[in-house]
Image 1 (cartoon, rainbow, N blue to C red):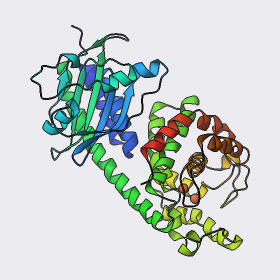
Image 2 (image 1 turned 90 degrees about the vertical axis):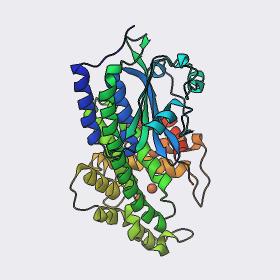
Image 3 (image 1 turned 180 degrees about the horizontal axis):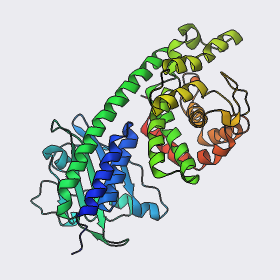
Image 4 (image 1 turned 45 degrees about the vertical axis):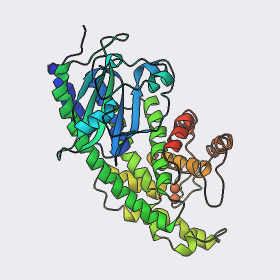
Length: 389
Ligand SMILES: [Fe+2]
Ligand SMILES: [Fe+2]
């Protein structure tokens, strides 16, 4: 029987993968990266990652090379699994044990868990081997579960995961758990800033800023791939952009309720005061100490600048507008048009697309148009993940 086994190259790959996780601050980017790196060093065709939320495992992210190579999208599903021993992921979350299964269709009847083939049926996929790992922190608490699917001997043959991989894979999962805890804390802090903004402006909700963060990353990623940006820079930029874009309107905390909550249109003077939210945001984010601070400040200050120079606060034109602010501006307007607001219903998809296309003349960077239009399906999937409460 073929197996993928652990050797010194494997050790090097695990260490390199762990080092990447330590530098990621955003939780969504981190979950994706924990899975990407683990699939790389175990040579797994597919995988899923879950986080523990109360007494359930929440499915966060999945990858599948075979489905992608067929030119298909991975079916979007959002579900939770009870933390008990009846499923493989639940068993691992309950026991903190690694579960290494050579063939999920040959699980002995006396095993407490069984294989649920609903994903295989929906995706026309055949799971054979799985390696399911607990993401356990240094207090021995399971914060998530990582499941790797179908180790590959070559492009076609799926084989078991070799037992010798388990200790290093477990070590990697612990690094993942620690990074995950830190990212959860960062997200909580960011959401507290966002909650303060929402108290002033009810449009700036948690789901809105999460969608703007995720949309920005998708548009950036499409651009970065098309422009040959190195993988390491791409991961770093996606990470800080995901968080920085969330703070685009943090300056609204400094705008009076009389203006923010005024029903009907603002007068010219009131609009001028409202426009100050950009410079107030930049002020809140002054003393840049990291690439994240700098990007967050750039976005807060410049997300209402227009490509033709007609925006505010400075009337910057074209490439003088920081690149990430150009991206966040597109994400923010796309979300405003496609979402429910107190004063409007969400626009239908075709009307949103039509309006966005028009705005690429004058308002948005025209080079980014293709990176919005080609990613509309992905953006709409994100929308499902962050519904308004
Ligand atoms: Fe704004
Ligand atoms: Fe916004």
